[in-house]
Image (cartoon, rainbow, N blue to C red):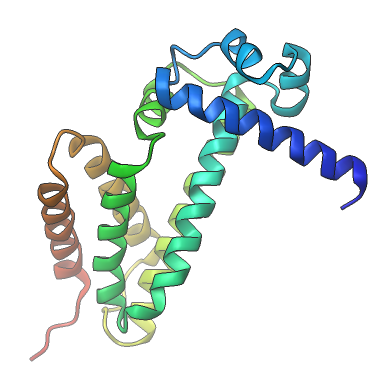
Length: 199
């Protein structure tokens, strides 16, 4: 990375960090570009140069959140010996991360809000595709190890992602222990349909 690229990344990080605090405090919808300008001391032009829009800036923060989640998962994955254990571990990490992450409320507003520009929709689609690919690999590992029966891996990955998204939305008001129990039960329901019988 050359000096100019390094400066660009440092500027993006500074803008993102200051914006994160605003999104956490005010929410996505109530945070304006003017708020971000005031908090960062940067010009609108500079913000638009680095992120193109408020949506682009927020997606940058969501991408950071995704990378943090993946790093946390990678550090724990070795603790789970089977694909079944990994699915239970996945659900627990998802619920605890989702409930405890400072951007959760703002992310809900962002994803359920108004229509997005095409480039933002494309970036969101890529993010979901990464999640589905993660699910695909998890299910495929279970099939290859003989834990899960042969089935349509693409469909199962989508079903798992849809279940996770639905649980995320519908468990918001729950206490953490209730949400963990709900996610575990959802994992049971999912696994009951794909796990091989122990007979």
